[in-house]
Image (spheres, rainbow, N blue to C red):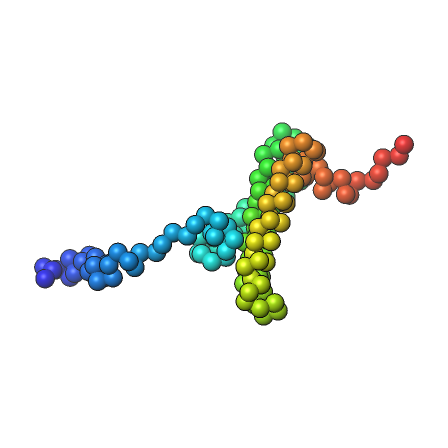
Length: 149
């Protein structure tokens, strides 16, 4: 028996671990499953919220510094952050409404399709940032008057 109350408090978690055994440890899911079910873990939701906060700062900053050398790294970040944010957020929508409207069997194909859209979006934004004018300049071009020839 523990000698003091502090010893008892320290021993309690170890005692419960011994009672549960090794089988109670959470199993790691395969990487692909983790990407497809992007809203299933608290880690993904934490990532979603951190990306959300960083987008609140990075998007206006990219427009404020454009055109300058700082625009390129911000465009690269935005080109990754927007698809990640959209992927996790849309997984939440699929979890909430996919079963209601299309049935349980349709949720997995919708999630795999969403992963394909996310990868295609990220690849397109990466190509725009590396070979084109960049994300910020492309969006700014929407508000510029067309050049008269």
